[in-house]
Every structure is written in C-alpha cells, then in structure tokens.
Length: 348
Image (tube, rainbow, N blue to C red; front, side, top):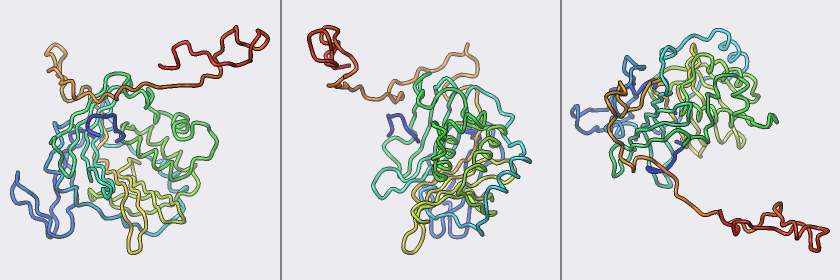
C-alpha cells in the first residue's frame, strides 16, 4: 500500500497526539519505548488542534497498536428526533474558521490484522478541490520506512470528484445514492460519511447536510453516551446488519456535529471484535502541503519521484466491440450485420 493510491481525509496536523497516562501504563522516557502493562492508554489531544504540526510521531504506533476494544454504548433510542434537533442548533466547530487550499485531516485507522498487513496507521492528509493532495503516515507494526510519504498531482484523485460533496445536502445525497433509488442501506450511509471524513474537512454547513442525510435515513439508532479512543465523550449513531451481528457506529460531537470516530464491529461468542476503527483527531485547512514553502519565492525542495504513488500501467485487451462495425460488412451491404471492426487491433 505504501506506493499506491490508497483509500485509506486535522483538525490540523497540528493536532499532536500524546499518550494519556492511565493506571498500569508507564512511559519509560520521553523518547524511549512504551510499556503497556494493563489497559491501553487513551489518546489525548493537544490544546491547539487547528495549527499545522510537522510530522506524525512514529512513537505513537506503540500506543495505538494496543487499542482493540469495541465501544460500549448506552441505552438505544430512535435517532431521527435527536438528529433533527441537533441540525437546528448546530454550533461552530473549533476549526471552522480555518482557511486554505487544502483540507487537512489527521486521523488514526485500525483494521483487523488477522490476515496480515498493518494493524494501525496514523495519517496526516492534504486534499484540494483540484484532486491533488499529499499524505504522511506511520504504520504499526512498523514497516521498513518509518514515515510513509505520498503525494498526488492535480487530477490524480479525480475518482473523488472535484469540489466538496458536503457543501450541500443534494450533493451529499448524490454522493451516497447516485441513482436516487432510495436503496442505500443505513450501514452504507454511515460507512460513506466516515470515508468522506478521511478526505474532506466539513464546515458547519457540511455537518448540517450530513445530519439532514442521517435524519432522513431509516434504520438508525441513537445512543446518548459514546466515548471514542481519545477519551472524548460524544453520542453514537448505529446501524446493524446480519441480524445485529455486525454493527456500524458513528460517534458525533453532541454540539458541533463533528464526526469523532467510526467503528465497525462483529459479534463473536464472547464479545465484539473490532474490524475497522477510524479516530478523527482533527479536521482543518492549510494553504500548502508539508514540503511547500510559506512564500513561493522561497522555492520548494524537490520531491523524490518515488513519493508519487502512480498506478502500474496495464494493457487492456478488448476482444469484442459489437457496436463498432465496418460499413462494408453492415447488413444490406453483402455481409452479416454487426461484425466487429477493431481499428486498433483490439488493444488500447
């Protein structure tokens, strides 16, 4: 995944995450290893979450790698009334006043590593409306590269579209249900909103649009208490599939509507197993990416080419093109109708 386009959008890079001390956890030195002796520590946010920092801290991998428990929820309630109420009294978020060309997102992603691959990844991501961007990531367990660097030229991320899908409720509905068929399931809505949160930094209008979409989605359940892995208290919105065996959860900040976390768990014989967890440390904006100078006249250091995650080139062999025919072979011209004609030998 290090050199490919990756699906996996800080509040700013700025949000330097530090380990929160809890009983049974000992930080040996400021720069030394972390010994986890009992329950994993919560993650704690720095005071200024909107000022860009520099790099993700590789030592955080030792902390986040031990976060595995599923979220405990309170008593379930109908979701629609609460979602509509929050949409009418939504407050501005801490970083709503941030400006810049790039959405700047800082998050941690955990995945079920039973089939191999990294267990967790700390990501700082830049994404602009011209489909360009960049990313810095630290993986746990550590790989051969301490900090992964990725960047995208304008147009490289065109599969995400241009503009902000969270700018208007109609745009967001199209993003979630392009055919407007009303067949999108509630778990798909939660999953898509979480995915958008890894690429975009929604302002208050975007969060209001997301709440309107959630309120109009049947099959969601509300919980008035849910705590994320950073120790932040929020509210939970869930959907389930497979008769409740698989649970999808969004944890929202109860006054600003910001998405704090997303979780997907599966029920086992004794507990719930976490399949995916995304902890959003911050959503902000930045005028430039990490290597770009504050002033264009200063000049930017050259990027090494291997940092650009280009896809491998492939030949596409298309043996049949029934809609392209030779006029001389068409019906009524002495030959069978719809005989394929391959102007490029069937190879692009």
